[in-house]
Length: 148
Image (cartoon, rainbow, N blue to C red):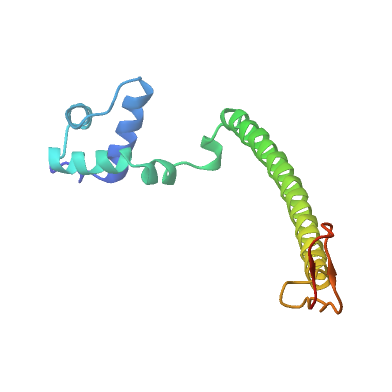
């Protein structure tokens, strides 16, 4: 009589049994436990059992112990809350910085306007005409008198 063909399900079940004993499943241990199949076939199915995709694919919601994940979820929630409060603090600082920047820009614009107004009032050398004197120039030294 011919032994039944080795399937992926058979190898995965044997891997789970070995793992429950606290041992790492290997191709030789599986061949010894199953008593059939080639090392090539067993290794192929062992690799698929080791992959995350096949580990999760064989599990149902009943296999998952929620108590193991509650602490991790709580840690993530606390971290999320901390990050959210940091983000809000950064938003407030950014709004304050933007407000200060806008006020500074208004002050600069006001000062530039005042400077322009001051420059328009201050006579430049080109715009000033020196009055011509008529008559004698009187110096403090009375001995010297010039007539224009």
